[in-house]
Structure formats: structure tokens, C-alpha cells
Image 1 (cartoon, helix red, strand yellow):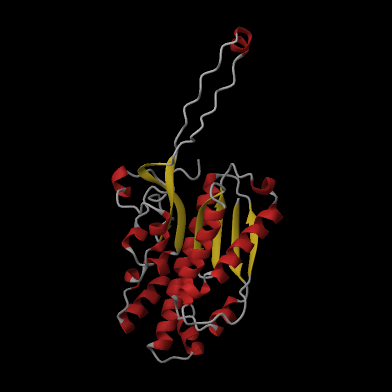
Image 2 (cartoon, rainbow, N blue to C red):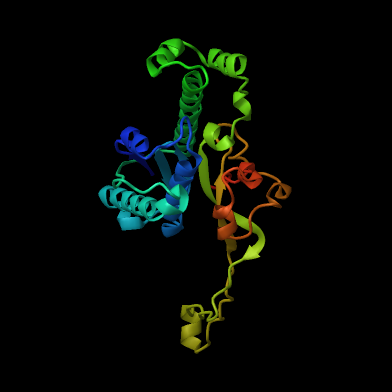
Length: 288
């Protein structure tokens, strides 16, 4: 199951609050913080999220039991969690920009039949990120640096293909698109990641196993089950490629040696922190 939320009327909302064009990093990180809240509140149910612009998609585990998998309940709960967190954290990220009016988000839930369709969905959303950001980056460069009006910029880009937009950016404005911040080009991926060598504390009161019929008849007690620890997980915020196989394929242990070791570090780094572009293998177990 995937729940996707979208900002309602965010073109006007972003203009009213003076969001920077083509990308406003604090506004995007506010979206990421709201999504992190959803992931933390629904830990064990939501296992992956991807966001761009004013939208976010949340992947629920196959074993999800939330609200007995009732669509209306799940969608409204996710939208409520996200909207509440967005408003609550506004001043943390938008600083001196007061919230002029409440934002709103709509949501929908789609059930995908297999892991292939899930991967295809998230690849589609990241392709959409690339397409939209390349267009918007070129569009606003023509206006902000090229002196065009919005109408003129639209006409200039009409019928252009990707390579032509790259040429405009580099040839006219010396902008190498591939060197722009990964958060703008690749969107944001949130995923739970096991911390190498770290485990949760086992239960302090192990329960005895149920006696077998033979044990019950002879009066023998069952063995006490040893408490089991689980790998400790941290919520990672990434700006990585999820179209290719790297994210979804198993990676060597060395690739996770420098990962954040706690939730505060995972969500608290600057949006351009190097740890946010290391994601190989983190999706390898999600679709099993």
C-alpha cells in the first residue's frame, strides 16, 4: 500500500509566503520533517517515504495491520499527522516568515500487486522530480538571470528537450545542472536503517514457553525463553538515486560504516550533509 499526499493550492500558498524559486531549501526540509514525523509515529507500519516539492509518498509494510487496513482510516490518519507536523514545525524551518494561513493536503491510497510495481512507482516519482526540477531551474534562470518575463520564459522552453535545457543553463548562465544540490534533483527518501552492531535492549522479564502436552502430563516445566534483542534502527534522510539498482540491492557492510548512530543525528543534519547522499543497499529488504 502506498499513501500519497499532495499540497492543496500550494502554488498560491508558496507565493503568499515568499518561497524562493526554483527551490526553497527550508520549505523542502519542513516537508521532510513532517514526513519524518509520520514515519516515527507509524514505525513498523510505514517503511519508506519519498518526497518532492509539495508531495510525499509513504510505503506501508506488507504486514501492515493499521486500522485493519481500512483505506479511509489510513489516509485520513496520515494526512492528519503530516499536516499537524507541518504547522507545528513551521517556525523551526521558516524562521521569520509567519504562517499566513493554514496549509492543507489531500491524500489517496493505492494498493500495488507486487514489489516490481512498488519499485516502478517510486522510480516514476523520482523521474518526475528530475523533469520538474530541470524545467523549473531553467525557467527561473531565464527570468532571474536572463531578464525574461514568465511568458517569455515559457515560450523559450516550449518544445525543448532535456539536453536543450542543460545547454541553456550551462551556455547562458554557467550552471552545471548535475552539480546542483541532490535534494533538488533527486527529492528526499526516508528509510529505516539498522545501525551496524547496535541492538535494542531485550525484555527484562523473559516468559516461559508453553509446556507441551507431554510436559503438562508429567508436571515438567517448559524452558524459559531467552530474551531476544533486535537490531536498533535509525530513520535516515537521503537524497539518492532510487531508480537504479544501487538503493534496492544488498550493499557491503563498509557502505554503512559512517551512517548516523541515532535519530537526532539522522534527522538533524543540514540538508546538504554528506551522509544524506549515501544510500546503497538501504532498500534491499523493503520489498521482501
